Length: 490
Image (cartoon, rainbow, N blue to C red):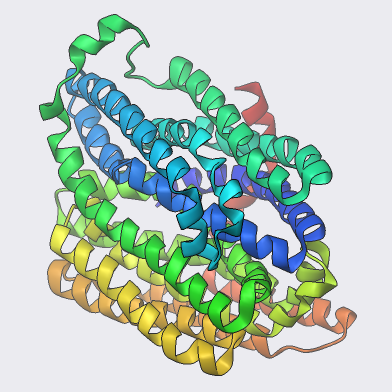
């Protein structure tokens, strides 16, 4: 538990620093693009992320899982073969996908936005695809070796470079500049991860023609098998969320409606990244390496509890101060989305729970369950969205999001109870229940700002006293206070 808390604190501090810069990007996008332009940019950006996942062949989690296991067992030669083989394979695939995207940019624009008018913007993306694919592959090695401080370093540098790449381009060229910034940021990212790879990854292969002698497709068979299932899930997930779900919004609410939904969904992404970037690295590899199911059950309880201790205050803050956050990070034109945010963020609460409980399915390569959960939940999500968005508009988008993760939580809990005998520990259940009540109460608050501050502090303080143990409070405060000095020295 203490190792999990330590890793979480280190990455949480780094992620908070990174998020501050990413929120600056969000503000500039909202001001210069407005709802209509932001709706276009987000749809293209989501498609870009989908292409990145497809082009990496779903190998990121597979690399993290098997490289960490091989490293724990001292199989360094196998790791080197995986690095060389996947690097060459992914680079070639990325070039092919880039050419396809360039040729069919007009058709992609029609698919995403119901018009070929923005095909010229899509045609910029192929230049960034090889860069982001190789960056993603290298980051999977960082995860596998648990180089926590270097991962934190990349988070901060990546966010700073994102601001540097975006602001001058969006100022002069608006939407086109925002798309071009994706390419420039991709080049920056690849440069940074290469430097970290060269000096901090414990098992690495130099970039030279001699290294090609390690190319061996058999060495990546397990990674590819895992990646095939993960790829199928990711393709469906992003197909539903990026294309079909967003097209539902565009069809019924227009491109501007898609832009208006951006604050709710964008803040959800930022909040969830706190979990994925802090405790995923530690817990995924720990569960992957575990043989004893009692260790897995304990780790899931620890993961769930620490995840809620991180996320509940974040989500509570975003719910209580949603109007202030939208006015600061976006513009007054985005205010219509404020009323759906409590529903959206309550969906994130259940997402944290379901994601934590279901993590052993992915870490232990339970392929049938991975496929069933990954595909089934997204199909349910789209069906719900198809019915509620035409009736309730933006509220329907948030309702479908919440419904999906409530169902996901129930199914994940029942499956893990059956497969590994998982049960919620008393302290985990208490944290979960009190966190849920905290968020519901936060959504009901509608007070003057000074009254809100007082009630906010009382509620959050009471929640903290009931959920955070004394040693955890002391440890977190000590680490948060000394982290930056130690981090800079090392």
